[in-house]
Length: 145
Image (cartoon, rainbow, N blue to C red; front, top):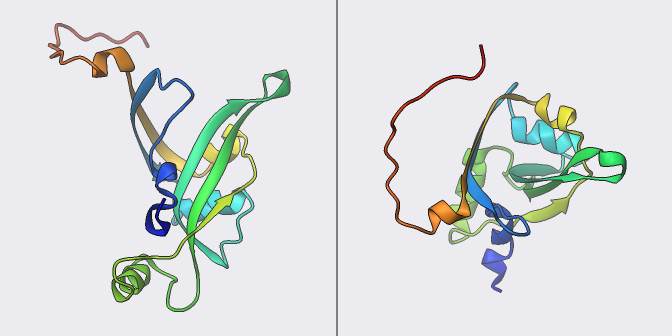
């Protein structure tokens, strides 16, 4: 595995069986949500500039829920304190940006959600994705009164 692509596994979601796959989008409840979540998970955000979060949901003893948090971050300093500065640093380095992968502490779902204003998760069953089926909407209704 090349050094340049060392952390690409963290940029694609997967589970043991990948029964469902999809996309997720979120809006932060405050400015710099990646930094706020990383900080809540114990990352020193004065030293590291979070670029990516990987959140893995799990259940522990007594059915306690948690998110495993992995942060891919650039070291601050050397002109790397904003996304624009990181972009310039990468351009000056031939398009490459040195990053660090930090396996942070677990977060309780409430700790994570406190930093989000909106969260949208879209999942599709794997059997539908493996076939070329065109879906045609027939009707729509709401179960919530």
